[in-house]
Image (tube, rainbow, N blue to C red; front, side, top):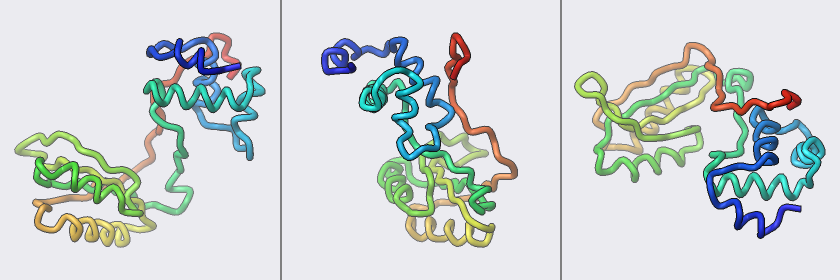
Length: 176
């Protein structure tokens, strides 16, 4: 059973064999089941509670970044996916980024370095819409929110779906 004693021992960035198996078992997604942690637990021979505890601890230790859904926007009917890019004052980027990131139609928002003179943009916000006209209306809403802090922007529309995956661990036995 996973308990606080193990928690204390696992403060470093090292993972044990069960953590490694857990990452391998979940890195391509959780089972489509009403109780996905129970299914993972069965495969690993541990309890669902231990699965949750281990995942929480790996999140805290920043071994894994997040547990979340990765929707296929195209299959959901969102075909006008645009990365809006903004030139905003560097001194206000945290404040403005938080405001833009809270908009219901923005899936993610982050700062990136400028590459002057060709690339003046430092704030990026992804929008997903049914068509380009709708995406441009969303862009207009972001522009209105930014107001006088908007020193220019553009929208880079997706032309194809890229593989959405990060680093993957490989099982020694390839049974996951």
